Length: 361
Image (cartoon, rainbow, N blue to C red):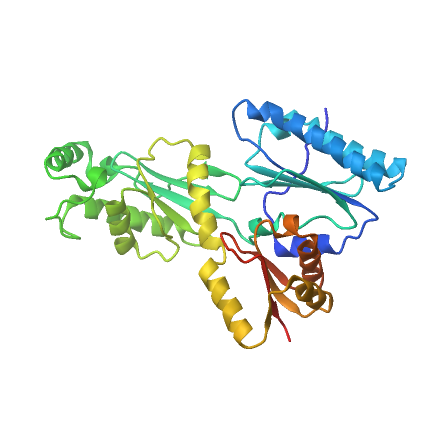
């Protein structure tokens, strides 16, 4: 029986800074999209083996000796042969190795298929996934079911409700629930279809129910680490719950629809992109920072100048488009130098700008 393959689900700037300091003599970087379910899961290890062959070919072309080539290939072959590992993928895979101990990142979204051999590991592929804390919670709200789920970038699981009411019956009892549902069927019931126009906040059973849920949630999370809380349900119910709860951890937007029985892994696929976007540096904020720095001669947009400033330790923050390092190796070099000198590197998603550097001086 082989040991379980070690992999990393969360990318941090500190890890990238450490990797940027790990000089070769040679590093292999392999990236590829992966699949959570379906027949493609059986094809993923085959595609990975093909990328390993391409990497070994590049190593030979660059004159890497047979012993080092064999050590790197053996480490990569362990990954391709671990079928349990390939059955638990989440969207993307990046593998970095210079010998027998590869660094394996299992990522929540696709990355381009790519093979690189160089003195340092290729890190710009990982920049869009940097997050120091990826914990979050999901609260589903309906009359039939209240669910609390806790997760990270890679998974989501049911959490104990504790004092949170599990459903409408838990607050009012079955008989009262049936009366409310009959009443709601002719008045656009709030828990199923949103508030009716004459239901004032605080004046109906739905509001009392949501108050009970909010009180239970406050008690349940007391003393727990703060994490983004995503509401799942109708817009009307979610908006009313926000007003009642006042919990600062609740994020926008709402995950709409009925999710009483949505499996956790499917809920994760829907929820994580929303949570991830709240953790990213928004494009408009990044653009404003760049514009302000440019106005004060504290920003660079020219690639050659960025690389030179990064090498001099003058770059405080480097902003790169998601494919910058793939499209221009000089920007991969700039990212490496910035990280090595203790700077930050951020992804500028959906931006026409390829690169911008904010200077320390």
